[in-house]
Length: 283
Length: 218
Image 1 (cartoon, rainbow over the protein chains, first blue to last red):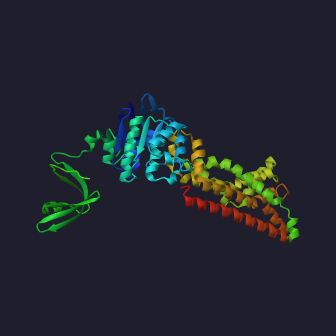
Image 2: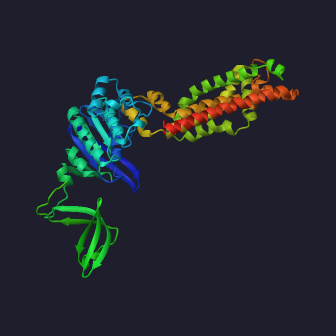
Image 3: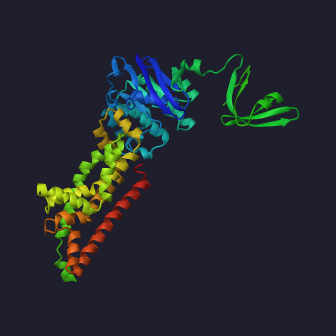
């Protein structure tokens, strides 16, 4: 069991904010930490890693990492940390990056094989693609067999295809190592695929905590589909109005009445909901 | 002309390089922890330390030389080579500290934290992660400190005097040649200084240029 109860005053973009997190995590769990930027997600990970200070207690199993009198140095926590910007050591090859953490050649070889990096082990990080760098970073984080793996938006800089590939690798590695993991992510599909629990943070407070299904499925009542989009234009055609809305990469037209059209302003964010009786899926 | 070259006394140059080499070595050892501390600290004493470190850049060498002269009188170090080395360390300190500190400050903080989180101490992180990733800044620091010490004149004049084989370095030797109107030797000495300085700077810039091209550092 991992017990986290911390408190820290933050000076964010939106003024002063109190980061107040009280969490209990089962060992081996995969937690997704979500929430708007500036809600304290990264700070929470950094406090857990010991590179930022806060008041409160952190207990991992029987080990105390922090209490009133005492804070364990990051060096002694046995943590794996995957940074959004990879943070690899540019002066070391892929293999040396791993061995720098721990001189365990067998484990390094195994991790590199699992992530299909064996061929690249003699390369320097600046000769790798973003996806390859993040895999090295992930392997490096697992080299000291961490008690807690922390990932700060590890896949947000990658293209969708590489994301899916790496999500699978993260899943495989999590199954094999069983490491308790906390990952910051904004991507619902990523959270759904990887996490067993989602913690939603807003302005430093936990506002929702549950399974991905409970937290992420936004349907209510009889609405089966709901999408957030941006209103681009409202066109008057005879007696009806047509709204052009951008949802993700797609533009859609929605018919509305004059009354509805008058309530909306161009550029605002809108929600489109529809009842779907038999949705079809094609690729 | 050829005769002058053959009989040219090169000891002032050897002395200059010996002085510069020792100063660079000592300053590197002293400046490494200092520059690292300055680059990492958020302490309020940082601006004070930075100002003190930068003082030799703005102070006239005669001021620095005067204080060192007065201090050395108590420990009998005036007009000795050892005294010269110590004085040079004060004089060239900013040229070692500032490039190193600048280099450390450009390093990715996450990278350093990744090393701490991996269980590595600050010392190991400094030596195996930070230092190898600031090679251009490191080279600049070493070369500029060396070159600056070779080019030093005012402080050496005040506390070194001009004792052959002991404190008569190249810059002093040139001054002396001019004083005794031996313009021929002064010309040759000066030309050697210009040539060496140029080559040293050129090598630094070429190295930094190639490093940037291959993206070997941030």
